[in-house]
Amino acid sequence: MKNGNENGTPGHCVPPAYVDRRNSAVPLNYGGHERRQFRDSHSELSDEAAELGRALDHYKLTHHRRFINHEEMLEVIRSLGYQKVPPAS
Image 1: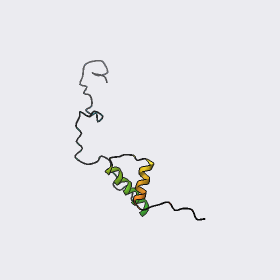
Image 2: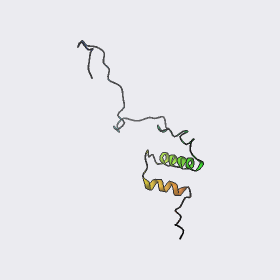
Image 3: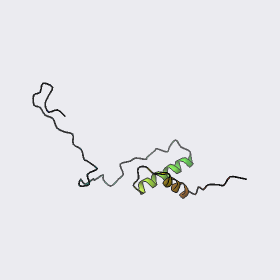
Image 4: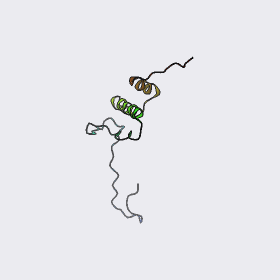
């Protein structure tokens, strides 16, 4: 960042204000709500897919996870009552 204008004369240059969220000494106050928004993201899906999407969103919010792994996804799918059916012989 440069202080001053293009001819090198001193000027006003204020660094941008930001909060380093990685610094645990800085208290973070988000007003008690999640920053992520899941609202209306399932409107174009079938009923079954929307149900799965809402269940995954609920799991992520409950467990404070932005991304989940395959085991967690399988846990959510099983919680909805789905199970693997053995192939017909």
